[in-house]
Image 1 (cartoon, rainbow, N blue to C red):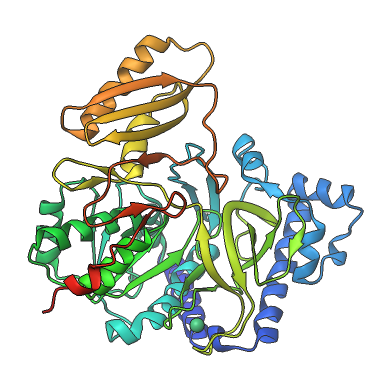
Image 2 (cartoon, rainbow, N blue to C red):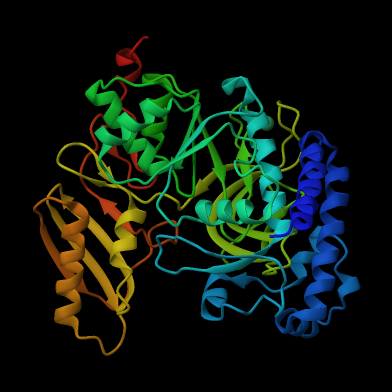
Length: 469
Ligand SMILES: [Zn+2]
C-alpha cells in the first residue's frame, strides 16, 4: 500500500475521530442533517449503479429526489436477509474500489458476504472513540487501554484489523494500548492463565462465552487479574452471568451492538440506560410482523439503513433481531434513539463436565464446514448427551454425512458423549423468530432456573456471596 494512501486515511481518521467528541451530544436536528446528507449520497450512488435500487424505486413510483428525509426510507420495500443470502451481489455495484469483503460468522448457518468501502471501515475505526468515551468513567482513560479479545480465528474483527494494518496509518490498534487475541478453545484454566499474564484493562468477546468463562472463574475461586471492564458483542449475555460478573466479581460489563451489515449500531450508555445508536452512521426503526412502522417506545423487528457504506448498499434492511427502541431523552446527555433491549441473540453454550463451556460459534465452525449441511442445531440434553438436528442438502449420502458430523462433534467436545444425529426437513424458529444454534438443558453452575425465554435467571443468593477484594 502506498504511503500516499496511508496518509489519506490518516487524515480521514484524524478528522472523523475529532468529530466523535461532539456527535453523541449534538442536537437531534444536527445529527439528522448529517445522516440525511449521507443517506442522499448513498441513494444517488445506488440508483445510478445498482439495478436492484433502480428497480425498487421504479416499482414504487419514486425518483431519488423523493427520498429526502430518513422517514422517506420507509417508502422503499423491506429488504430481507434471505434476499441478500440468496443473491450475494444484489446490493453491490461492480468495480467498488478499495475496501474489504467481509464474511459474517453467524451461528444461524446463513453466512453473508458484505463489501465495506475504505471509508466505511475507517468510520468504524473512528466510531470506537464514542464507545471508549462512554467507558472512560470505568476504565479511567480514553486511549491506550490494553485489550484482550476472546474471538475465534478468522473473525470479522481479525479481517477488519488486517485491512487497517495493510491500508491505514501506523495505528493498527485503533487507539488501544495493545491487543491480544485469544481464541475461545473452552480450556478456561489456560485462558485465565494467559489473560492474567497479559493484564488486560478490557476483555472483549462473545457474551455467552464471557458469561460462562467468568461464571467458572467465580465458582472455582481462581485467582483473577481483574480487568477494568468486560465488553461483549455479537451475541447476548445471559442476565444471570452479567449480574454475577458485576456483583460477584465487581467488574463493570458493557455491551456493543454490531453486525456485519452495519459495523456499529449501538454502544452502551455509561448510565446503563440501554444502547445509544450511532445515528449518523445507521438509521434504525422498528416494524411489526406485517412490516408496518412502529413509533418508539416500541418493540419490533429492527430495520436498518446503513448510511456510510456504498460497498453493499443496505437501505430499509430487516436485520433479523427484535429490539425495543426508545426516543426518551437520556440522563447522560447523549441525543437520539436508544435500544433498550435486544432479543434473539441468545444462543446457549455447551457445558463441559469440568464446568467450562464451548461457544456456539466454535461448534458451528466445525459442523457447518461440510458442504452437505444446510443448517444444524445442537441440543445438549445432559453434559454427555447431544442431539444434532441437521437439514441436509438434497441428494446427500446421509449415513456417511451423519457419521462425519458425529465425529466432528466428538472432536470439538474432546470428551466421551452420546451423540444422536437426526436428519430433519427444517429447524423450527424459537419464540424470537430465530433458529438457535445451541440449546442446552444443562444447568450452568450457580444459576437456579431457566425462564424459557431470555435464559437462566439469577441466583438470588448471589449478592450475599459476592467476593470482596
Ligand atoms: Zn445515556
